[in-house]
Image: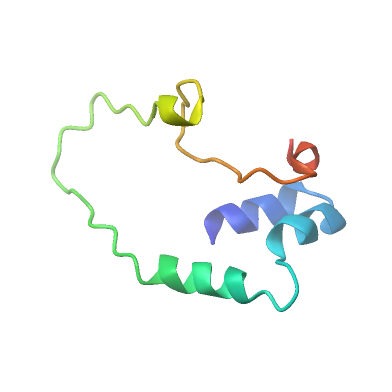
Length: 82
């Protein structure tokens, strides 16, 4: 939700609506959101975080090393999100 709130605050309303919405009845959008809600992320507390690296390398996707592992799916109008 934090990323969606930040995107809504930084994008024009019609651009945000394009990315936040889904096709037809938005069934897939709801199913994906439900699947993500069912995912449990277990925090790792009391760990040494003096050197943290969030970079990820995905050579199988033909991507360079990404500083943050967040990827937007290929969409026709991805340019409007930059």
